[in-house]
Amino acid sequence: MNKIFKQYSMIALAALIITIPAIINGFPFVFMDTIDYLGGHVRIFCPPAYGAFASTLRKMGNIWLIPAIQGFAVAYVLYYLNKVMWDRVRVVWYIGQIVMLTLFSSLPFVSSLIIADIFTPILFISFFILAYYQDKIDLVTKIILLVIFAFSAMAHVSNIYLGAGLLILMIMVELARGEFRRHLSGLAFVIGGLMSAVVVLLAVNVTYFKSLSLSPSAPTYMLANLVAQGPAKKYLQEVCPNANYKICKYSNQLPSEVNDFIWRKDGIVMRMGGFQSLNEEAATIVKKALVKYPKEVASIAIDSFVKSFFVHEPAAEIDNSITKENFPIVLEHYFGNGAKQQFLKSAQANGTFPHHLIRTIDDVVYPASLGLLIIATIWLVPRYRDNKYLLPLFTFAFICGNNFLCSVGSGLFDRYQSRVSWLMVLALLQVLAMLIISKTPLKVAKR
Image (cartoon, rainbow, N blue to C red):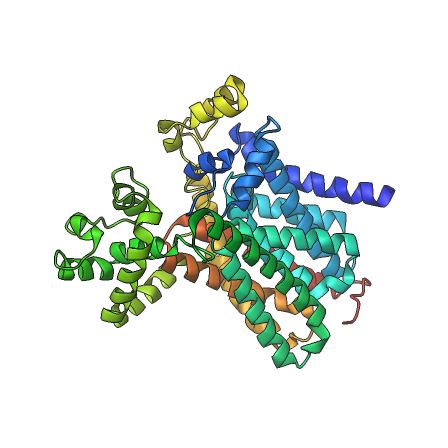
C-alpha cells in the first residue's frame, strides 16, 4: 500500500508541475473547439469521445478537473514508460524529466488546453509500452493502458490513422528483427485497442451521420485544403458553371485560407448547410482534382509536409479572440459567474499571455531537438534488437506521420505540430538516460 501511495503521489506531483503554466495563466487554456467539447455535442467534424470526457467532467462543476485529469494521464504514461524501460522509476530523474518538459517543450500548453490534442502523444506513449513492454506490467496496468490507448485513438480524427501507422512500423521492425512471434502478444494488445476504437467510431458515424466511415468530414477538410492550395479552386473555376455542383454558385468566391472555407460564419461550408450537405460533392471534387492535377497536388503535399517542420509554435492558438465569441457566456452557463470572472482575469483573456517568451524558447529547442533526434535515430538503429533503442526511431516516424497527415489533410496549423513536438524532447531525455544508466550499477533486464 505504501508503494502504491508513493507511486501515485509521484504521478500527482508530476501532473501538478505540468499544469503550473495554466495555474499561472489563471485559467485552463481554451480554444474555439472547447465550446463544443464542453457541451458534449456529437459533431461530424470530430469524434465524440473527447466531448464525452470533457462534458462528463464539466458536470462535476469545476473546469480545472479537465486539465488536472489530462495532466495526470500524461504523467501516468510517462511514469510507466520510465518504469518499463529502466525497471524502476527514480524519483529525481522522473520529476526532473517532467520539469524539463514543462520548461522547455510544448507539453504544458497541450496538456492544459481543453481540446483533444493531448491524446495524440498519449496514444504514442501507451502504444510503445503495450507493444514492446506489456510483459513488464501487471494485468491491472495493462488494462488501464489499453483503455487509455483505445480512448486516445478515438479522441481525434487523425489518431486512428497514426495508430495504424505505428502498427505498420512495428510489423516492419519485427520482420527485420526476425522476432515477429516473440512480440505477438504486444501486437495483439495494440490491434485490439485500435479495432475497439474503429468499431466504436463506425457505430457512432453510422448512427448519427449515416456514414460508414472513420472520418466522414474528411472530404470537406481535403477540399478546403485543395481549394486553399489551388488545385481544387482551379478545377472548379474551369468546370463551373457547367458542372452540376452546388458549390459552383460560389466558384468565384473561394477563399485562400482553410479556416475561411470551413469555419467562418459566412464561409462556404456554412453557406452550403454544413459538412453533411457538402461531403458527397466534396469527395467527388477532390477525386477529380487529384486526377486532373496529380503532379501539382503531389508537389503541394510535399511542400506542405516540409513546411510543417517550420510551423510549430506552442500555444499559438491560446489568445483572447475567444472572448469575442460566446465563451464567457458558455462558462457562466456551465460553471457559474465565478468561473466566468476567473477566465476574464486570466492572462489569455487579457492578451498578456507570454507568447514571445514561449516562441523564443521553441525557436531554439525545436530545431535542436529535431536535429538531435535524427542523429540519435541513426546512431541507435544498429542496436534495434533492444527495445529501448527503438524509441527515437518510433518518435521520429510518429512526428513525420503526424505532420504529413495533418498538413496534407487539414492544412498548416501550429497546434498540429506542437501537440507532438514535446515527444522529441522526451525521446532525447531517454537517450540521455541510456548514456547515464549504462554507466551505473543499475542493470537493465535482458530482453
